[in-house]
Image 1: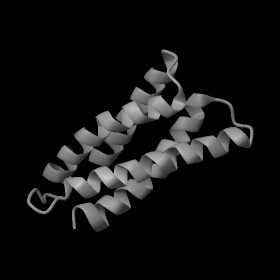
Image 2: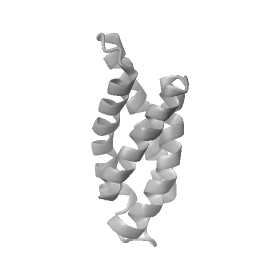
Image 3: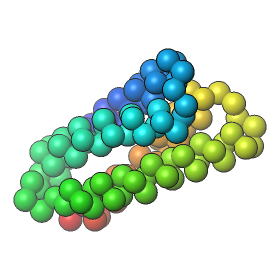
Length: 110
């Protein structure tokens, strides 16, 4: 539930930033930073219940990788002809959320 809520929040923030005219790379970064902080806190407390072993440095490093994967995926979708920024961003967020869950489960909160 935490992951789904965080993913939805990331999309809503992304859509808001796009709506006000922010470039998709910056919109993705801003939404990602906000939800990264929230996600780390909520996952530490409720999902993995592992406050002492959580590795915030790993979390930040994997967030950076996640950001670049997200941007690369969006760029690819634009190059193949998709032009709706809201749809492209939404698809990218969902795809990258799978990566995020797996990394958090197997590396960050291990």
